[in-house]
Image (cartoon, rainbow, N blue to C red; front, side, top):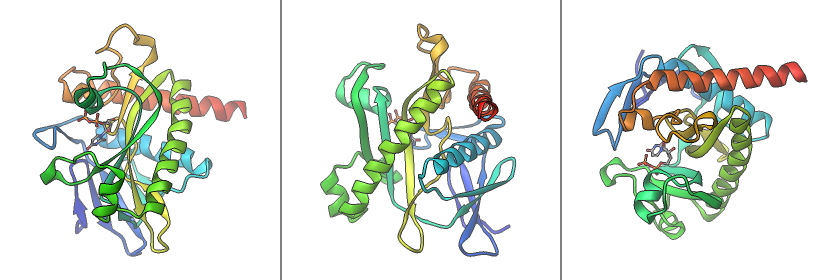
Length: 246
Ligand code: UDP
């Protein structure tokens, strides 16, 4: 099948319907702006399942997403959107670039969730933006920026509690949004251990053992696949538990 676009972790295919695209999740993993490359066995299947599940949960909370359905273990159908060239990062706890850029100690609980915008531009190394830089570069309108901020915070409020019910701390995560033909902002891309920092609450005193996300790959901590599987298992068990109790 002819590809519409191939990224680091996913391939997008067209379908017979121009409003619908097919996303194929790959096992390929990259880090540090693709300077580190590898594969994580089963990642495509696991991330597709986790993303589908989280998109469905968010839809139930009234957050519009591009998700339509899952059509294979590593493929989902999505609404065709124009992706904004912005990465929206939400942080509850200091880690990664926030620590490197501010000197905050890893693990510092932030007094309120921090929403940041990064420019999706590999050549520039995805720099941190300010509100006015977004406006000057025409990456989004002021109204869209405000919507992005409030959607990101609503998603964080829901996911933080959901992951906590899975005994997982949602440290930070990255979102991408797209515009449909009517200019509605839809949550797009994926939400998975590739795009979130997730810490196991049962391993609080082991800063490496608690990591259940792509930092295991970035930092060569080993057991990457089993960490991703653990996240999937906990999410699916939590959903089963809540549906049984309803
Ligand atoms: N993130 C992502 N894609 C990117 C950059 C960041 O999914 O291109 C996620 C990352 O996994 C983490 C959060 O966004 O959950 C914040 O990442 P950070 O800015 O700390 O970057 P890093 O430390 O990975 O350089």
